[in-house]
Amino acid sequence: FRTRYYYILLYSVSNIIVIVFVECSIVAMGNPTSDEPTVVATPNSDTPSTTSNTCEPNSAAPPPRFYPIGTPGQPWTPSDCDEWKARTSLQRSYRHEVLDRLHRDSIDESLFDIVRYGQLSCDPDRYPLYAVQTKDWTSSVDKPRLLVTGGVHGYETSGVQGAIRFLQTEAKNYADRFRMSVMPCVSPWAYEHVQRWNAEAMDPNRSFRWGGPTEEAEAVTKYWKAAEEKTTASESHRFSSRIIHVDLHETTDTDATEFMPAKHAKAGLPYEAETIPDGFYLVGDSLDPPLDFLSAVIEAVKEVTHIAPPDEKGTIIDEPAVREGVILVPTKELGLCCSVTGGRYVATTEVYPDSEGMTREDCDLAQVKAVVGALEFVIAKMDVEKKEKHG
Image 1: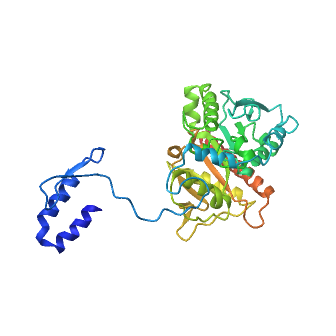
Image 2: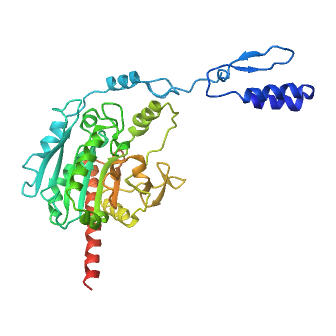
Image 3: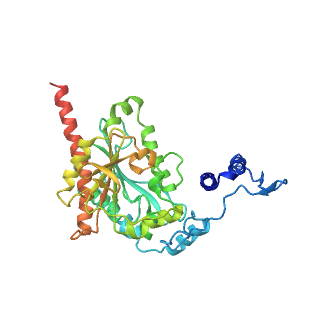
């Protein structure tokens, strides 16, 4: 800023060119990492003067406030996070809407076990974490694995209820061909409070890496690693391309009115209104994506709901649509849940519950169709491979 100003004088006031150039050069040579003042020569003076090497105060107007918590343009402090949590409230029951639906009457206990894999430290008794897995989940039986996760973002209702619906209606039909585990509600505190973040104002779906910062993600990661440790090295190599993981999510209108503004405010970033895609779409991994698999899931979901079209730029949530209803992102780099298995056939679903005429029943069924579509694709692929192997 200061250098640019003196360059203007350089061209307009030639008789002070040397003085101005010397002052500009000395200021530029100051150590920007030091708190010590910089000594500079000033015109018409034999005595150096002391000036700070910090920028002059910016007279620009402060950024506009678009969220009620925090200081615009500055990341949230711990007290801001505390204020955010204080504004949340219980809105539904994890026990009644999730745990009670996993009772033995609705789950075939001859095929599945209900296992507790952890709890949330904010209230371990209120928030136990459960998975429903086939009895051969950790065995070395010659079957590929399916992992279904729901409720990573607690406010996305059909991710939770769709996972339970799959367990109650379709899972038994595939238990003979797949080792399966369904984790219907990864973030129960967020489910009860209808929030994207957990109780510490952190997004679990950006922390699915070993030693990640959220206990919700850490619990899922440890659960998967424990199953992998019981798998021999030879089996791991043989089936690494036959791991399926479908992570069930929603994109809602409240993303634009609450959750994305909060995300930007917390980071001290400006926020511009965004367009919510009208319809279902999938997020796949940009590293060698199985596009035919993702398209097969899209086709299965079409039986229930419409697919989100790209915008005028050919994008969905600012990512290029590589196929109908499909976008790709670096899932592992972002710490997304669908990256936790390292499997070949992974996808994050995004149901749009606010579309005209869309019901909660439709949303849940769309999630079920996505999982079934993924399974049917892999079955068809295995059948082809088997035929080719035997001529």
